[in-house]
Length: 207
Image (tube, rainbow, N blue to C red):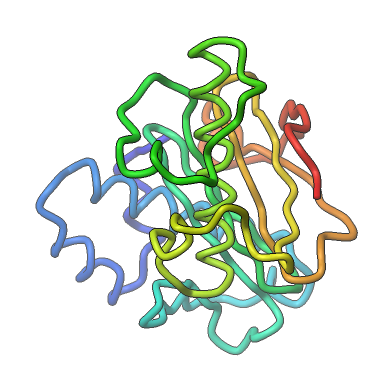
C-alpha cells in the first residue's frame, strides 16, 4: 500500500522519526501505519474535523491521540500485514501471518501444548494463534510477552476475540472485560486509503 505521497500525511515530528530508521522497509511501514491511523480517525465522530491529528507514542510503545483520551489504539505488524485496532476501551492487538517458521522460544512453553493437533500444519496454526493471544494480552497490560511463557495458561482475567483472515493471517484482540461489539475492516490497497471494506473473517476461538 506504500506510495511516496503517504509521507505528506506525516507531521514534522514523524518525518524526523522516519529518518531514524535505517531500513526502507521500516520507513515505509511507519508511513503506512500512521497514514492508516489518521485515515481511520477521519471516520470517528468528533475527530473527523480535527485539522491536524497529533499522534503520540508513549514510553510503553502505545500510540495515543492528542486531546482524545477516549480513543485507544493498538498496532501490530507481521510480514506485509499491519493491524490497527481502535476502541473506546484499552485493547491489545497482535496479528501473525500464517506460515511455517521457527518458534523455538515458545515451542517449549506449556501454553502451546495441544494434543488435538493432527498434523504439523494444525500445530503451526495453533502455535501462532496462541502467540497472538499472548502478544495481545501483553500489549493490553504493557508487559513483555515472554514473562507469560512459563505459565501453563493465560491469566484468568484474559478475554479474547480471534479471527483467521482469509486463511492468511490470525488476528487476536485482548481486553479486560471482553468486547461487547467488534467489527473487522480492511482498507482497500487499490484505492489509496480511500475507503473501508468489510474484511472476510472466520472465528478461530472466543473466550
